[in-house]
Every structure is written in structure tokens, then in C-alpha cells.
Image (tube, rainbow, N blue to C red; front, side, top):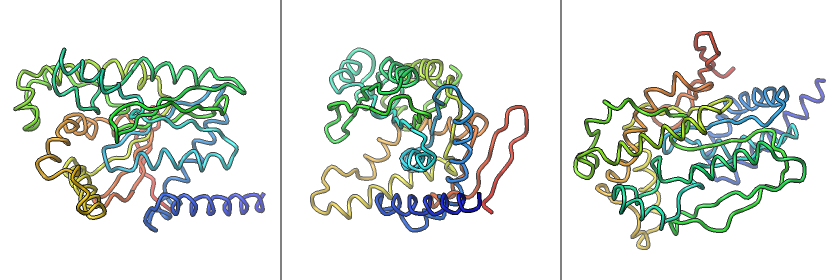
Length: 314
């Protein structure tokens, strides 16, 4: 048994090293994986082993929280136990550009911008989740792909892994429940005050979120939440990302956002990001607490019927 554990440890070390190098992640992320993420992978392994169907796991977090990286890493770690993991991003289910422009004409101009609930093909998302859940050995499932550089869908890819053991769904508002109607009355930022003064856009988004929650989020078996310290941190992280893009792009970086453009862009996400930061700590099964430098500093587990317990690395 000890030799098997040592072999598994060496395999994980190689897998972690390969992932960090391949993703050009900082060296500090290796310890983040070993201390925080690998222990969660062991838990997911045990849950999958005891399930008669694919487990649906949500991965939620604001922009810059690391949810996309986590959703790419977990399948790699779980593969060490020969578990097959289908990893989906809500972003790949955006409506086509033409369909969003139709919504902008018929409902509200802000719906031309992708991101908020209501700008995705919810029926397609439900269908793909169901197909993956029912897949048998040798079955193939078509998965949509959205190319943000052209702001539109491109050719889908195929999941040829047959029946997955786990299905990951990551996205910035995964797991968030709709707000109460009276919470929508007052704008939360300049974007809402100036471009949605009557609340048409935010009510539409909230109504669509209720549909996402009922058909996709509520049926999730477990939810992982990467919790930023506050919304100001999320805004700052996105600003740092834009600065890095500007430095790497140089004179070619004309499409990179300035301060005013960034504030307007983030304004589309602010309401639900704040709502998620306030509500998901009580809804998530596992919450990774992040500090202002985007590092995990604690894991909080929610056990049904029991108090939350905080776990720290050994």
C-alpha cells in the first residue's frame, strides 16, 4: 500500500509540474495545488466511486478567481485514478452574435454584450448536460465552442470519452440564485443608472437567472466556490490583467480597455458578482477563500445539517 501511495504521489507531482509549466503559471501555484486542490480531488474521487451516474460539479467564481484554471486542472488530477471528466464552460454556450443583437433590439441594448444570464443558449446547455449524463461507452457528444476573438460560435468539438465519471460546469455566476425583485429597484453602478434607468435589463437578467438556477444549478451534485475578498479586488484583478495585456501587446494593443471602458465592462457583472459574494458562501459545498493576491488561504466545507468547518493545509 505504501509503495502504491508513493507511486501515486510521484504521478501527481509530475502531473502538477506539467500543468504549471504548460499553463505558464507562477511557481507558487504548485503549492496551492498540493495544499488545497489535490485534497479536493481525492474527495471527488471518492464521491465518483460511490455514484451510479456522472456527478455534476459546479465551479463558480468571479473574474480572476482562477475557476477556469481549476476546471482545467481537476480532470488532469482525476485522470490519475482513471476517472473521465468532461469539463464545460458556460462561456461556450453564448448565443450567436446575431441572436444577441436581436435581443438588443427587442429587449434591451445591453444584451448585445455577452456575459449576463440571458445571453446563453440555455436549452443547448441543458441538452448537452443530459446527453453527457446518459452517454454510454463509445458514445460521442457534440460540445459547442465560442471564440471570443470573433464574438461568435465556431465549429463544435466532440466529447468521445463515452460516459464521464464527472461533469464540471464552470462559470462566473454558476450556482447563484436570483435576487428578490425589490433588490432590483436601485442601480448598483453608473452603467445601470445611465443605461438601464427603468430596470428592464436587470429584471430580464434576473428572470433568466431563475431559469438557469432551476434547470442547471439546482440539479448540481456539488458546488465549488472560489471566493474573492470583495468586489474591489475583482475589479483590481481585471485591471491588472488589462495592464499585462497592454504591456505584452505594445502598440498593437488598440483593443485593450482603458479605465473608463474597463469600468463599464465590469459594470455588466457587478450586480451578480456582489450577490454571489454575499450568498454563495452559504450555498457552496466547498469554498476556497482567496486573499487580495489571488492566493487560496483557506477551504471551508459545508456538510449538510452541520456547521461549516474550515480546513487549512497540513
